[in-house]
Amino acid sequence: MQLPSWDSYYSKETTLQAFTASIIYHWPYIWQACSKTKHSAIEIGCGRGLHSIFLSNFIPNVVSIDDNIRLVEKARKNNSKFHGRAKFLIRDAFKLDFPPETFDVCFSQGFLEHFTNQEIKLLTERQLRFAKVIVASVPSSFYPVRDRGDERLMPIENWRLIFRDYDAHIFYYGYKPREFNQIILLKNLLDVTKIVSSMSGKAHICMVVKKASN
Image (cartoon, rainbow, N blue to C red; front, side, top):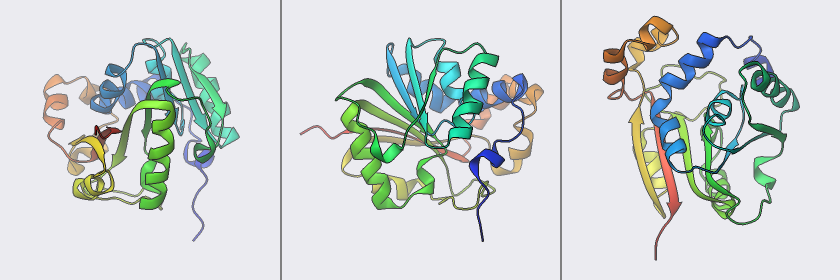
């Protein structure tokens, strides 16, 4: 069965409500990325560009890459629409050749789960050449759907095994599956008690990965 293209998956116009909902829902992950730098960050797999756009309000140098030209063009439009300062580039994640430690943090959301263990390790090795730390978010085995169809929805133990040779802090976050269809409602996202309670949910996994200290 042919998978839907990413540009068709992200074909809907991005509203301010959708922007706000994404930031609030993924806040535990976004905070990890933001707290690792005051200077530079790179996102792998831009999607709609929302997280890079948000972070560009606080970090002077934010770059986001994707090998899909249509996604990059859409992210650039959102960058202008939401007054961001991020730079969106057409690049292949497996062929990035930035100089060592060009960026403080390399971040991604909804990216790594589309690859094999071997490919994930290769991406990690390459990203840690040009970034000091990786912050990645993936849907977990508790996530209720496969949005595109090729996602590997794994429990946290699987990810810990993949990153066992690294200094890795890995934790669950996000709404519980039964609440998932409610997360896009802004009135729910602005309910502080719901946000706090969602932190004990397991729909997503955040991973903070560094080279292991010798």
